[in-house]
Length: 133
Image 1 (tube, helix red, strand yellow):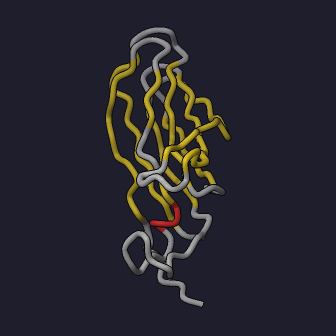
Image 2 (image 1 turned 90 degrees about the vertical axis):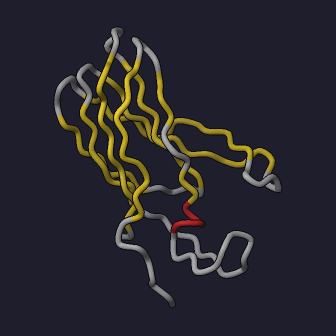
């Protein structure tokens, strides 16, 4: 069994602002393209795995960090049409670093940050990376 997996595939490092009660969706993650891929898309030897998504977030106001998983609604389309649903939520307290680690148990995933403070939540910093387990 081949185990050539990148130590860390950077998913996202971003600073952004949210209006009161607004949301921001992060990059979509395709775990088949990430885990042990040795050929371009549409090849036969892509390997599927369940990587860990690790990171940290710092928000000036209260927020929720939500891991969303997705299924393709029209699988033969490239890129696929995805239907996301909430899988796990972590509360982010105002002005405090919050670490997170999620096992990505679906082919497609993304992080959503939603303001819960009700006021402008400016200067949110989020960094996340995939890693093998």
